[in-house]
Amino acid sequence: MTQHPAGSGTDGAGLLSFGSHLSDWGYAAGWRLVRAAPEFVARNTFDAGALWASRGGGPEQLRKNLARVTGTTPDRVSGALIRASLASYARYWREAFRLPSMDHAELGERLWVNDIDMVWTALEAGRGAVLALPHSGNWDMAGVWLVQN
Image (cartoon, rainbow, N blue to C red):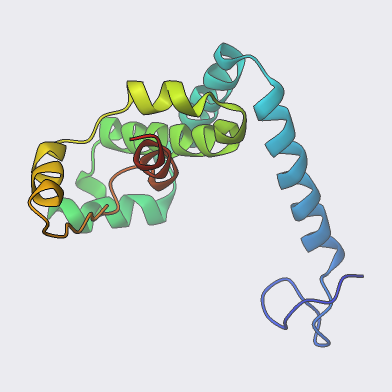
């Protein structure tokens, strides 16, 4: 067994449980498979997974979170919002898994940042600029864009 700081997925001595090893292996296998698959296969697989996850109203915690941010009750969160949220989450993971094999130069050209001219203007004037990415996008893709630009 692998030594790991004590916590979730470990036995009392800090060793990863068999279930944690299975989870790690599954994650690593998924990472490789998604990267190797053609884009349309990966996209359709993740889209289908998101749709499947939304069956029966979707994950209860997601429904509660969406209710909080939309100012309603969990039972009033629409199925369309649940599906859109799960589709966004699936797209994030598909992009994260595939990012190492993507053409970063092409991504730098395809992606955009709203109001980036304000940043360039500040830098040209000798002032600093702070870039913030709230919990509303793919940080990894934003990092690729920043490095490429």
